[in-house]
Image (cartoon, rainbow, N blue to C red):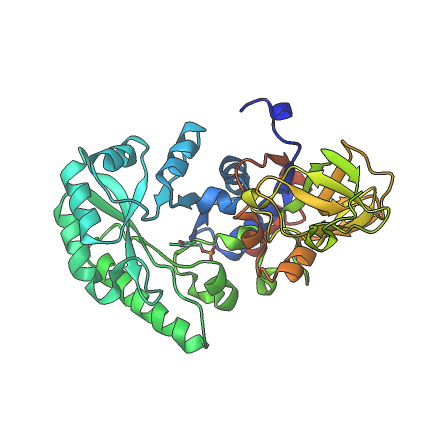
Amino acid sequence: MENISLLRPNRFVIDLQVIGENALALRKLAPPRVKFFATIKADAYGFGLIPVARTVLAAGADALSVVRLEDAAALREAGIRCPILLYAGQVLGPEQVGAIEAYDLWPAVHHRHALEALDRYLTRPIDCALKIECGQERLGVQAEEAETFSAAMLATGKLRIKVVHTHPHVEGDASHLQWQFDRFERAWKAVASQTPGAVPIAVFAGTKALSMRPDMMLTGIDPGQALFRLPASLAPVDRPPTPFHSLTSKLIHVYEVKRSEFVAQSLVPTTAGSRIGIIPIGYGDGLTRLHAGDVLVHGRRARVITPLSVEYTRIDLTSVPSAQIGDEVTIVGGQDDALISPDEVMAHTGVPRVTDLVIPLGPAVPRQYLPYQPHLSTLRPSSMAATQ
Ligand SMILES: *Cc1c(COP(=O)(O)O)cnc(C)c1O
């Protein structure tokens, strides 16, 4: 629905300045010869595909990567012309291959099935990526088979290998990462030996690898999480900011609890003077792990009553007797002098990363954006040039 005033009064406000500055910090970390693929899968981890795409490109990303074909299509339809790496997420048939061709995407070829489908249905040669599996045990051609596989890709005459990439599993000590890096680097070199004059971009490091071993960036990087909070090792400050500015709703119902029977079965406190408020956002919106146990009303804390309903959440307004229908309820963010930070929510729910808070937040909660203003950035592109 286009008319925002007809949507429920819930608002997720995203600060694009933080995303822009994070992208700029990553751009600064990666010298110009290193291609920066900004990974914005899953609707930019819930922060919103198109605004995030425009921001990271303005901050110096060279390319984007996504999993959903419809996300890639939406980027193109929004007029975004940079290379788009399409990670595997489809069973490729004629329609999917047709869309890859029409939207000029670089599909990641991760299996012989994908290779054969592309060979069968492509009507012209395209740029693509070869996905290597080197330790995550998810998608890709086993590193040791990369040479044979890339030979088969090239033999089609339709697949130009622009990128060789992987997504390592960063767990355990540094030797586990090194093992994956070594497998990947050998695979990349084997592929490159077959493409003289056009060495594919080698993309190994996402957020975690970059935070542990920035020297593993080879000739490309593809961080995602880091766009939304820089890892401490890459950030200039102790608690790096997040673009999660606020999540708010409005009271649609307020009443005083009158009940004196079946008190034990009541979901809400039944002591005299108990007041309850209802906001129209609930677990169907992904709120279960996205609140801190309290919300803010009139700058004061009010307790969230669990369990949540699909579309509603009850709030104990006993301590805010002046609260009325239409008043703003801040689930995350500041109100008057009070604050519920994303970190407080993460501590309350045991969710480790800000993206894990936002990914479950449903698409029916409208996103609003604070703009990215590159000239206000503390990390100007000119300071970037100075370090290169
Ligand atoms: C998600 C993903 C990335 C980015 O990972 P982050 O940990 O978010 O930086 C990179 N490559 C692939 C294949 C991915 O699926």
